[in-house]
Every structure is written in structure tokens, then in C-alpha cells.
Amino acid sequence: MLRIDTGDTAFILMSAALVMLMTPGLAFFYGGMVRKQNVLSTMMHSFIMIGMVSVLWVLYGYSLAFGPDNHGLIGNFDWALFNGVGSEPNPDYAATIPHNVFAMFQLMFAIITTALISGAFAERIRFPFFMLFMVLWVTVIYFPVAHWVWGVGGWLRTLGALDFAGGTVVHITSGVSGLVLAMLLGKRRGLGTIPMPPHHLPLTVLGAALLWFGWFGFNAGSALGANGLAGSALVTTNTAAAAGVVGWVMVEWMRQGKATLLGAASGAVAGLVAITPAAGFVTPGAAVVMGLISGPLCYMGVLMKHRLGYDDALDAFGIHGLGGTWGAIATGIFATTAVNSAGADGLLYSGNVDLLIKQLIAVAASYAFATAATIIIYYAVNGITKARATAEEEYTGLDLTQHGEEAYAGFAVQGGSFGHTSLNSDPSGLPKMVTMPNQPHL
Image 1 (spheres, rainbow, N blue to C red):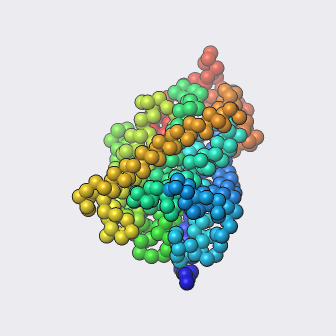
Image 2: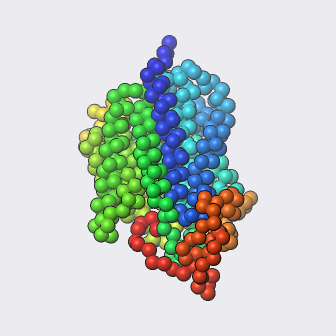
Image 3: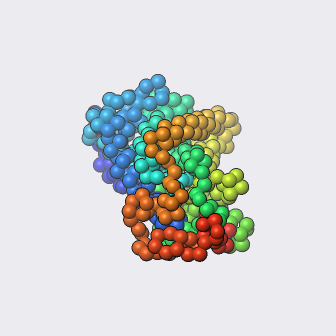
């Protein structure tokens, strides 16, 4: 008979709370990077997901993601409404904690994944479209991919692809879908003409700090017990985040002549994203390498949008898509059974490419599925309610036009016509250009 371990249970309860805190942290992180007239709408995109995804998870989401398998592709509805998800352990997933505690821990991953996508299309999406799109997205994309990777019988799990805490499931799916949506929606009006710097960097840094803090529950909690593997994941998580800060700031300093706080915060997130799939499979030394590479890689990914002409507003793909891709591939290189006997030896330790090929298959499948499904969902929802805010809504700001609220009542935006104050414009009706420093997020 299975017995609940109270220490493991307490640890996962705490880890679930830490992961839940990451979504409000993300709201601060994203909210500080947009303009004043869009801060509330941007934060709403994260906060509302806590409510919406939590309801869907109990109704059918957990059952589709982790329930009894259907041909390796998705679970069934046996556990809908948490039927059979009670206080007894489920040995297929976690033998020492209650089944409902495991289910709630996994819920927090689904919540933040949906919130991550919103950074790509910030400042230009209508709220009705956003809500309907996200209901379909989490149902059609997240739940199946979670089953592929983590569900018993899921085809990528059966293949032997490794994803300790969500490189493919969380970061690649959200980053790729965000990029697709950003391209389908088009650029923010005035991009390149109107200055669009972050309006409140201290808010963004607060968000980054909360993300870093919560990520310990994200990765260490994925050991599903208060044990040595959790300790190993904690070490690699902090190490990669720290190395990501160093890597980003170094390349930024060399390129721009200055190191920025926004860059340091972004580098920390880049390192955290990269280590997520590998946290319970690699050594601290590998975490240093992964973090040092993730910082410059994601920095270049952020710059890439300017050269290629798409508007990934808050770099959902540049950081999460690319960082998650690097993390999944690096797992195939640096994973070792000396850290986790339930894993596999990667290229560095085994000398063969078996695991690396499996990781590449998982990456390719996630990219292809997220891309195709996002396009289909976009056009289906856009046929019901329009996706893009009108020019008037966009220039006034989504806080007022979508939610009837203002973060800063009576504010004026330099060089623009927003809210209650009109400033000088050129004959085209667009505000005059103000030269801003060359920062990746601008």
C-alpha cells in the first residue's frame, strides 16, 4: 500500500505556491516594459489566466494532459471534474504525495505558459479575441503537448525525450505560438516612429526577481519530492540564471558600451528558461555553460526581430522560444545518469547522438504543432471576434479601450496623443519621433 510522505507533500505544496507566484511576477515583468497606457491590459493578460486555466484544468484539462492515454497523443476524460483525483497517491506520477497535490502543481505550469504568450502581441490585441483564443490554445496545444512529454503513454515520453520541467511543453510552445500571433497581427502602429521604451523598469525588475524566486519551485519541485534530485535542480537553476545574467550583460556591454538593468533582468530569465528542461539531468558545470550561452543567444534573438521585421513586443520568442530550444538541445548534450538515473547520458557522456536526436525530434514536433495549430485557431477566432485593436483603440491605449481603467490617471506620454493630453504631432497624425537609446527591448 502506498503511503504519503508528509515532507514530500509539504515540499510540493510550497513549490506549487512558488510557481503560482511566477504568473503575477510575469505580469510585473511584462507590465513594466510596455507604455503607460497599456500596463493594466498587459498585466491582465497574465492575471486572468490564473482564473481561466484553473477552471479549465478541473473541468477537463488535467484529464487530457495526464489522464489515461489515447494512442500516445492525449489523455481521455476519465479524470474530468477531478473524478478520481483525490488524496491518495497515483504511483504513475508521484508515489509519495496526494494525487490532487500533483495535479495542482502541474496546473501552475499550464497557467504561466498561457501568460507567457501574451508578451509577443502586447499593446495591440483585443481582449475578447485574447480570451477565446487562449481557451482554445490551452485546450488544443498545451494539454496535448503536456501529454506527449509527461503523460504516461505520451509518444515523446515513450520515445525517451527528456524535459524535466517544461522546455518543450512550456517555453517552446508559448514562444513559437507567440511569434506566429505577432506575425499574423502585424506590428504595433507607429513602431519605429513613436518611441516605445519601457515605462517602468523597476516594475520589470521586481517581476524578474519574482520569476527567479518562483523558478526554484518550478524546477526543484519537478523532482516531486524533498530529495537530492530537488537539491541538484535547485543548484543548476540558480547557476544557469546567474550565468545568463553575466552572458547577456557581457555581450550587451561589448555591443552598446553600457550594461543595462533591463539586460541583466532579461539575461536571468534567459538562463532560467534554458535550464528548465535540463535542471534535473545536468551538472552545475553544464548549467554554467548553458546559462553563459543562453544570455548572448537570447540577446541576439531579441535583436533579430528588428532585422527580420516582426514585432515580438516583449520577446516571448526571443527569450522563451529560443531559450527553450537551446535548453532542450543542450539536454541532449549534457544530460548524465550520474545526476539522475531515470534520465539518459547525452552526447558529452555517452559519445553517441541517440539522446540528442530524440531531443531534436521533440523540438521539431513542438515547433510544427504549435505553428500549425496557432494559425488555425487564429483564423477561427478572428472570424468570430476581431483580433486587432483599431487605430483609435491602439493610440488611446488598451487600458481604457478594453478595460475602462487607467494605471496613471491623467498621464501624458512624451511625443504622443494618449489619454487626456495631446502633444504636437506631424501631419500624418503620428507623434514626432524622439531618439531613444539602442536597447534590445525597444
